[in-house]
Length: 409
Image 1 (cartoon, rainbow, N blue to C red):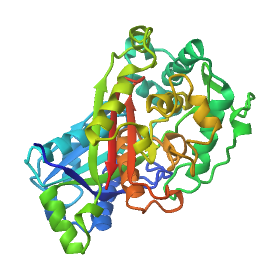
Image 2 (cartoon, helix red, strand yellow):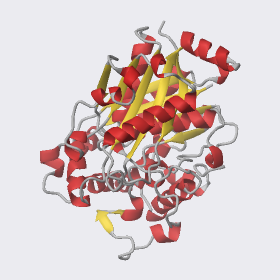
Image 3 (cartoon, rainbow, N blue to C red):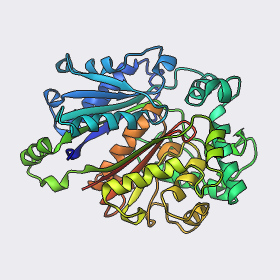
Image 4 (cartoon, rainbow, N blue to C red):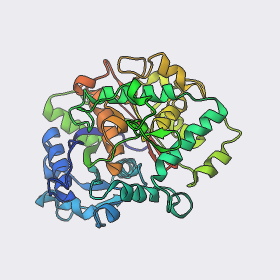
């Protein structure tokens, strides 16, 4: 039987910062995220046995590979540690978490550091859009196309419209909820921005289209940021709890996980699912696998969700794929306030990718850290009252790589 994996806590940088304007190398961002996590958890550098880095495209944005080695630069004591970098587009952070947790389950190490990181404000928006196109099948779906990913996720909305119907007002409501939640999050990129449902519904130059039905208000942010979490074995967590005078049961653990990879091209995914009730069946399987491993029957056992709202259409998809509604009926959860903070199952109380920000390689780690905060009652103004089990959904590409974690006490 594999070991349980505990989450000891972590740290997130302020996602509103522009590290290029600060004239800081992304190694400084790595150092802040790791040292901040050490301070937040009370761990010593010598406690860390291995390091995992999630990152999408530092080779493009920063002209730098070999990112596992940059973890060593975060503290002199780390010299000699085993480290590595993991890439799965926007799911890179979650793949790093899966690799680290697997090492703990196997008994290789007792404490693993996982850092998700991306510095994206090094290039103009058109160049950045082209870089992000490499998360799709570049030659077939992105090359020579301006802002390819809004167009791909616009097609996700089109597919919903074709199968079940889709109203712009429901996508606008999702955007407004995430922006409103972000105002409660001191690390959110858009915490000082203005947005409401009326503006999200605006069809003027104030809210231009960037890809089919996708408008600026439907999009996640271009973000510089990093997040670190520490994962530990049960034996280490027991010692950690004893030193701090708390019960082991109060320390969250990864109760369940799911991981599936679909075909790369969006049109191939849609073709495969044409006779299925779910638009992205592999995403649905990722969620249900995590529930099964957690011993949770369905979404009624989940108190809230941090999901991958790279666009409002991806959150719309997540609502029914988590089972909050029947397939194609995500609009009901929007209209009934189910997903709002204070609702039956709040989605993205942090603000999500639309509100909090989306430093691509960091997102999966940030989601897990927010899940940890929720189930330990430390999420501050965006706390979901009484949260015991929180789920995440992190997606790479156009629904290609999907990872879900269930975190709880």
